[in-house]
Amino acid sequence: MFVIEEIYLDNIEKKTDVVNFLDKFNLEYENDIDYSIAVYDNGNIIATASKAKNVLKCFAILDNYQGLGITNSLVKNIEDRMFKEGLYHFFIFTPSYNQTIFTNFGYQEIITSNGITILENGNQNIKNFLSKLKENNNLTDCEKACIIMNGNPFTNGHLYLIEETARENDCLLVFVVTENKSSFPFSTRMRLIKEGTKHINNVVVLETGPYLISNATFPTYFLKKNTDIVTLQTKIDCELFVTYYKSIFNITKRYIGTEPYCEVTRTYNEMMKKILPENGIDVIEINRKKALGYAISASKVRRLIKSGDISQTKSLVPKTTYDYLTSKEALPIISQIKQSKGRH
Image 1 (cartoon, rainbow, N blue to C red):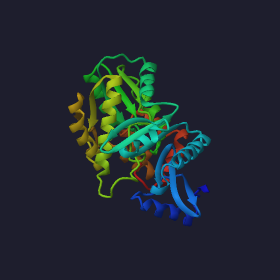
Image 2: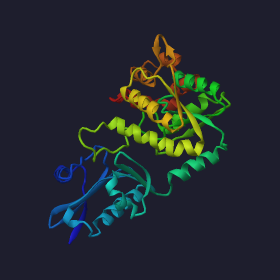
Image 3: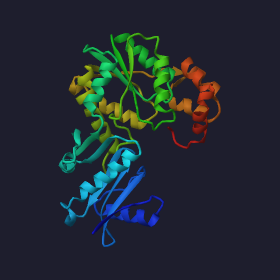
Image 4: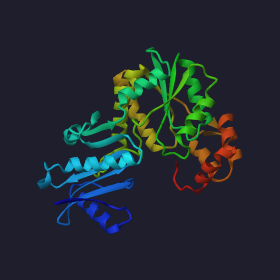
């Protein structure tokens, strides 16, 4: 008789058993996991699965227990947990040879690249999401330029990039990264970018949705130790952009700012320059705006906030951003930044 048991993450012994079980499959137990289950037969783990928010991950079943309906039980258990948490849209990142396992449960392939398949299930899919975004913003099929930014927070550097791009194009789409892994939550970032660009008539500010991959959400548990994760993430991200965003919005140009500080972003930009032009999208790089002799960056603004020098950010951000930073509404975020240890 098989028994499914939740693995409480503060139970070191049980969690270690799962970690060791996954190791047999050359899989890693990732730090962002918030729920795990294991299937036992006579007290021994024979299968396990986990999730991080709405991403299913770390599936493993012993070979001699395949074909017994255990995968179905694992998927149903994880999905039921997500329903309880109010999550109704699910992702699976898996080696491509496992794709049919999950399509049999109703998951739809989003993209396959470099032996990795991304699938989704639930109350939305990428084509419908982007088509509704286009319809709700009354966008036509004319050629468009785009910028994708985090805006953490929105700076004069971001504004300069948008203004320069808007001058060169009839219609500019500014996609704001939806994922909430930044110091400033998505709703705040979106609002500040909209407020800071409302004087530019040919700019439409949109959300990326949950599809453009970030370092925070891309599972790496099944990748070999020597895999260049940044390059792999970037390649999949670019292919997603070409397959869906380009085709649905008719995007022919993507603008980026030069990146003097962050190696990951610099690598991303270089990969874009290789992949996007091969797929009909020009990549135009604009020199970063400077202040006090240095390129303006959101990380510099956050460092000033962290050190208590908010007044020093005035020359680095639009008035709308500065007004927010000096408001009571921003106090919880400022407090969080002051206590944080990371760069985000």
